[in-house]
Length: 123
Image 1 (cartoon, rainbow, N blue to C red):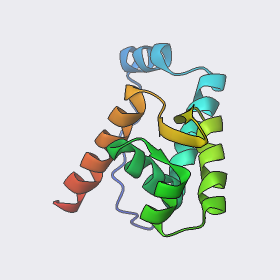
Image 2: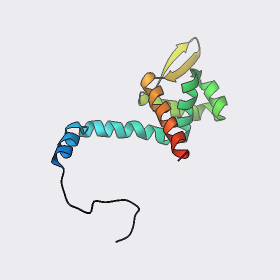
Image 3: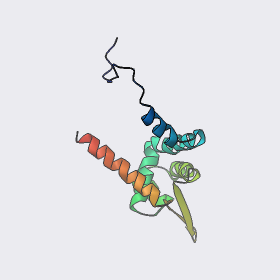
Image 4: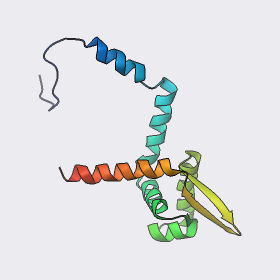
């Protein structure tokens, strides 16, 4: 058998109490799908950079475009994805549209992910 670096049980004992506890708290299928879709949004580096920028400050498309050195069209496309996933919201002020993270949950998730990546690099 090929060594994959993954440790596996050498016995075949089923721990029913653990299984019951885990099954009881397992997300339902539609919740699992929604979670997978939520995390899929973070799979694009441009969207991650936009989220990072908005983590710092509310910004208009022009400002995000300047920070990321990308066209406003490209930024607008990614903002639509983020908005449809309820990760960002916007407000209008005159002719300007300002984007921000939808709520504090997004900030927390993003901050935890950044901390995890930084922590993992230190290992």
